[in-house]
Length: 208
Image 1 (cartoon, rainbow, N blue to C red):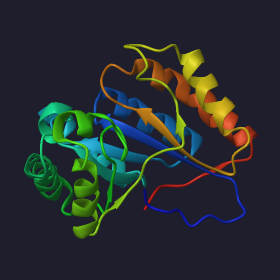
Image 2 (image 1 turned 60 degrees about the vertical axis):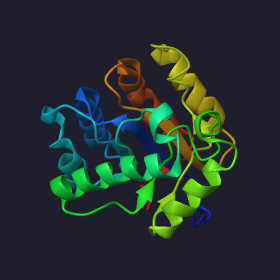
Image 3 (image 1 turned 90 degrees about the vertical axis):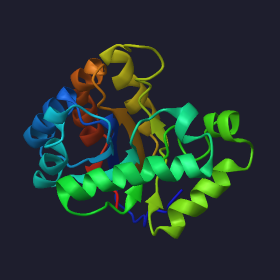
């Protein structure tokens, strides 16, 4: 996982995986309202109507990073060749729609996930990390999970509690949330998460 240059301030990095979607539109509106910046780790296999959101994320001052094209563990983690093919499809679509390839990446499931071992063997993840670094990208995991993937639809109250309880004693927090189409309660939870983090003394930054 790439290192953050930490200083004495309390800093929260809100990160959203698996978009863009209709939920991304709502999240961008909320971030605007609260004057907060976030980082979006995007996928490439999205409906045409959402392709313009890559640019919208950037126009509003947020960070954009690569996540995966398909988010299909069984395919992308089957081999190094499959991983590279998936990554290059995402690189190509982002180059087409935003004019450059982002320099940051998040592995689906994180950089120590079990799915890569299940589908590609025990040594695959080390090869994938080297591939990402060889291409000049930084990869980021998280240290606070909002828990919105623990079931199909986790309650907004539970998501808020998961975040604020786990940031209470931290000086820096990289917070995992999701903006995929089904995660409507994550959107509902976001205002209280932002308000709660501000009360805990956090300022908000983007990963780079």
